[in-house]
Length: 267
Image (cartoon, rainbow, N blue to C red):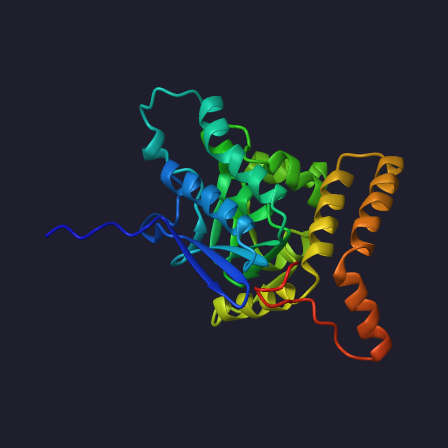
């Protein structure tokens, strides 16, 4: 009897944290169309679920994502441009446009488009054994899936070019030094440590963080004047929300604010 195939994305929710796990461990979670399209759909579902406050993307087994599964696209009647516009580009746009914080929990190698995915999170947590490789030049291709946008903003043009041209592996300690991740966590207990970090983030004011992400995304490509105008607009939205009243009330009462309401209460 043939066993049913495991889903390419595993989804689990605990304490307001939706963890989406790339589940092709035998291929170091190399991406095929099914994985990319399902990950995009799961992110959209998480965004629509009021019980979800933070999303974590990680990998099963010993890899985060080894990039494109070349066997999946070999011989296909589709151009590179068509493939990117069908799979990777909608995924990266979904992550950056999600109204909730996204943590990329890099548990192993992140190569090629997997490196782009690792860089796309609002917060990047790395295991000590994790590494990142902009491997595209090894097969004479251009970095895609957002790498040319993310990497130079993090490390500067010159280091970004060198990493892309030479396809050198970046290990965790250098990743922290370069600004490619916010924290390095021990390999042992990595998933539990990521969950604890995500739960801490989930306890923060969700509406204010949504607006903060919106402001930061816009500021990455705006002028100072435009950023100031948007800040003023979004600050009004934040100030009119119940979270602000709770924060001020808690401050005056010298207690911790309660930014998580019961599911039956309106946000």
